[in-house]
Amino acid sequence: MKNVLNVNTVSDYLDLRKQEVLHPLVGLVDFKKVSAEGHPKRRYDAFHFGCYSIFLKDATECKMRYGGKSYDYDEGTLVFIGPNQTIELTNYDPDFKPEGYALLFHPDLFLGTDMGKKMHGYSFFSYAANEALHLSVKERKVILSLLDKIQFELEQTIDRHSKKLIVANLELFLDY
Image (tube, rainbow, N blue to C red):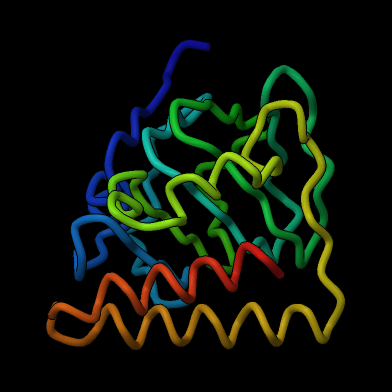
C-alpha cells in the first residue's frame, strides 16, 4: 500500500470531511451533509484508524479489504473497524461520494465506564470478522434513531451528563 491516510483521532476524520468537531472523543458524519471539499480527490489506498469506526454504507461502489480479506458488504450494511486497524480501498474512484453515516469514537470515551470492559466482547471490531452486518428495514430504523440521539447529544453543550448519555446510546447501538 502506497498512500495510507492515518486517522488517529476522531478530529482527524472530521477534519478530512470538513465537519465541525462537537466532541473530542465522538464524531458522527452524515455524508449527505458533506460538501465537495469534504470528499478528498487525493487517492488513498488505505485508511488506518486509531479509533473505533462504524460506517453505515448506503452505496456499493466502494469496495474494501480488511484484515487481508475482501469485506462482504452491500448497500445498507454496517462496517466495523477497531482501533489500530487498516482498511484498504480496492476500487477507489476520486469522484465517488459516499452515502450513509460514519460514527467514530475514541477508546478513551469509555474510561471509568463499564463499556471499557464490554468493548472486547464486540467481536465485529476484529479482523477475524470480515463480514459486515446486514440490516433489515426495521433494524435500520432503530440504528438511525440511535444515531439521531447521539447527534442530538453531540449538539448540546458538553456537561456532566454528556458522556453518560453518549455511552449509553453507543452501548444500545452496539447491542443491536
